[in-house]
Image 1 (cartoon, rainbow, N blue to C red):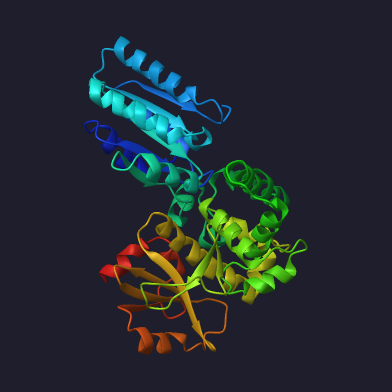
Image 2: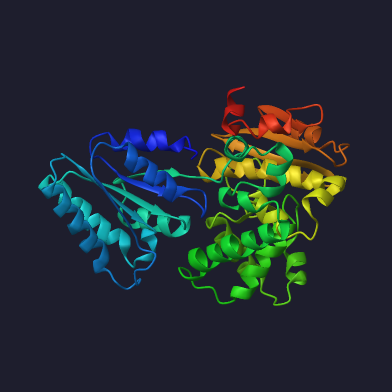
Length: 396
């Protein structure tokens, strides 16, 4: 069983004094539950894991009853502290107010009950944190699996990772591509849309949201005007609705629309977003081509490589390490621009596509970024880039 590096940080925090509620969040099927069970095995005191998956949302007493049971177990134990883990906590109505009340009560009565809250809907989690739990929590984002993790766990090479992405649960199915694609679309995508978006947010046109995901995934690593996407949709919606739905898909860790870089602190959402999946499996599973066929299509494979680079960058964005954009002007384009504390870095991906684009030169003259990097031909090998921490580019 693979132990992800995030477990070390969790163990460190849980061995400290009771100071903050720990928030563990991220997309579905990245191993959050497995990780928390590994955490329990490494702690020297007792733990209690519960999930709100099957709890009616209106049952506001469930959290308190669960908390009281944890207090009872702590009182009956010889340990000085006790850990309560609540999974999918965002599914309970008014969860943050209840958590705040119980946490503050333990603080007043010196009950050494430590808390980890988990969730797969970052939007619902973040709303609860900002509304009620300010100053009471630390968060840890768990992203999709990286290339080194999939390589170490399943022996995948770079091409397999670029096509099959970073869902560990799907690894055993890749020998049957039809079965693998069906698993990604039905078990992962549909579950995320149904449980992390539709059950928690009012969506007037669910079919439109699903179709937007399908189109956006196929266009991953491409700049597409939203009115063009609107024209491709059988059930048309206005551009504001589509933009809002795209934001919901981003919060679920599925699909994002990157904004155009302007070099200014105040930005407006670009009329033409650059679609980017969070996991390349979401891209390739929507295609009719097989893995073997895709490798022979130079143009398609180039987009898959660029999307894999974007996926790697998106993991860092979701962890709040930096901001991610694209840039284009006339016929000039830069695939990705990362920005941190006012410092920008341009990244161009060259693999299987026309490399005569002079966008890097124009971007450099216009914005004077700290660094310019090429991933692929005459630059950083894709395998090396996908094995690195992109944030360290700012230290070069």
